Length: 339
Image (cartoon, helix red, strand yellow):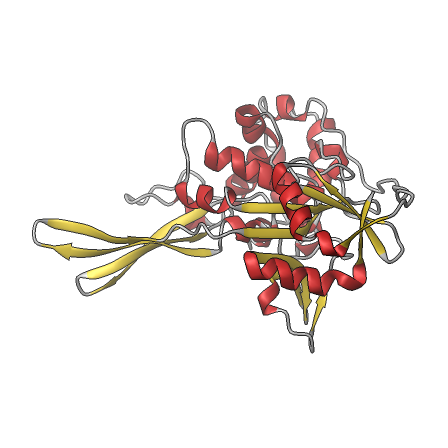
């Protein structure tokens, strides 16, 4: 089998960054997330391949928090598009966990299927190679296996690394893009037989069997008021979620020229569904809370055949009110919604 010595990672990253924009998990002071390797500061940053999970998921690699879409200029007789900002340079995401990769699989469904293609997302996705890190030690708030995710075989990875617990990662190419990456890194890969690491059991589990079907029958239940009572609608759950993809499109004008851009938004905010005439179909916090969990656990599953929650546990860790989606799932399954 092919193995990669961890001591060679800086050299490997430097080489990959010469040919593509490389994103790796980094600890930057109090913050952690997937950042460009070019931003790595040896004096203050730390590589976080062994951290479960970095706070900022890698979705911004494919769906930036803010992105310019196109610029325009007003001309006689109309408006002309002067430039479209599709980003198609090669990218590599290195060290993504199975839960975050499943979230990208969800984004692929939303942005590339059912007769609609988001060209901005597609330009990035078509040129992104993904190296996933198989996860053998789930954290206390992880429950990806309950959401149909295999942490040992990340679905959709071009290559997989497996931490042996020694100085080596096992390296496995899974797609032609992964094989190409192996060829690029041939000088750093060795042939060595090592035992696979032993996987540990999940502390947290939920039973999703029948939850989507049950939720489809309880839209008007008063139990939503009880479940949402503690929610402050701060939206931190949606910004840290690897699969949430609500966005807004805005325009910036400067005289007769300007540009349109889109930025992340949150279904937890009242303005998100505010209509031009002043009506808001989800004016109350309870309505927005209900919509978030129905979208995660029922609506997306009905449309695409998979839940929009991947069990990464970030929202459980970050919620200031202690709202726990795994407990919402259990409550939805066990509650008597007819009351």
